[in-house]
Image 1: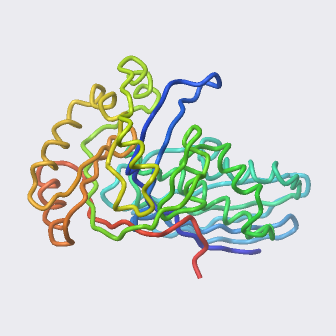
Image 2: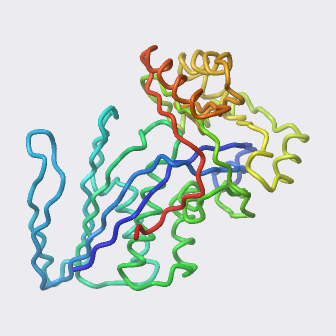
Length: 324
């Protein structure tokens, strides 16, 4: 039995420039992502065939701690299961193991390295990142699961197959392998270079409901908004996060799908001490960069008083990584 604990940070896109649809069905994209201090935590336990183990995992209010017997049988292959616990104030999302991106990541890495041992990997995910917000929580968990599985299986952190699998799972997953602040191109999954991160306070605000990424891109194809050449040049030339112009040409499409997004944006833009406002990816979260911590705390409280979910956090240099 081996256990590893990991951190999986949230992210925002400082710059998201979506281009035309490619022949492979994806859109070309230039994206500058920045990790946040807000994060999920994972604990991964590897149990090999022939071992029998009783795990004590977090449960619900009725049963705060529960026992789970894990005893992989010979011939079972790789079995991956997840126990997802949502923090207070977050709307839980029921996700089956076969649909959980973290579980998929472990299976994909095993296939990439040709691993065929009979074993079980059990993942406990403590969720602090809300879903359907554009913060990349599921992708962050998948990246952390890749890092954790690689460690449990004795792979070197720089093994190229880890990043290759991350890219196959999604653009955001690839970013979390690097963390901090980075520019990616291609379909938003090809790493170009890092930028010096910043530490400013920001507030994430989300109204009820979400935005389907698929529907947002369909609306985008109808609107076909361009990327201004001057902003694109500035974004590509930036070497520090605070030099990046805030831009997201997917935002207009998302706002057509969720009535409250424009209301949230207007509220944040007119709040004293806010230096910049942008939709988080396709939404439904919007972030506001604040001039200091005090503004962030006050803004978060003001947004919550309107019935919206809101949290103050900060930009960070975190990546999906193992905790000491």
